[in-house]
Length: 60
Image 1 (cartoon, one colour):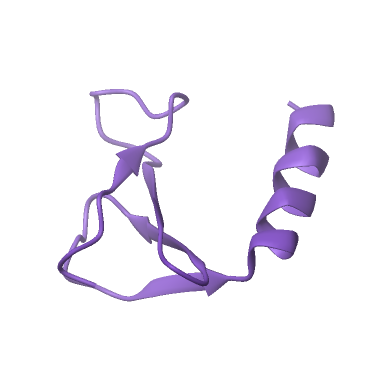
Image 2 (image 1 turned 30 degrees about the vertical axis):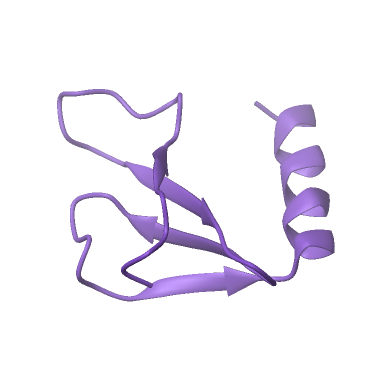
């Protein structure tokens, strides 16, 4: 995962709190806590990630 380019959520502020980063791999989308970049990351198939983003954008 060291070759991934991570992007911080636009909803994450600079005051700490809940911060999410996302990286697009060859076959999956990786999601991690930006406060713990060496910690665990979740992996989603693109279809799963797209469904989550559509759901979340309707409920923000």
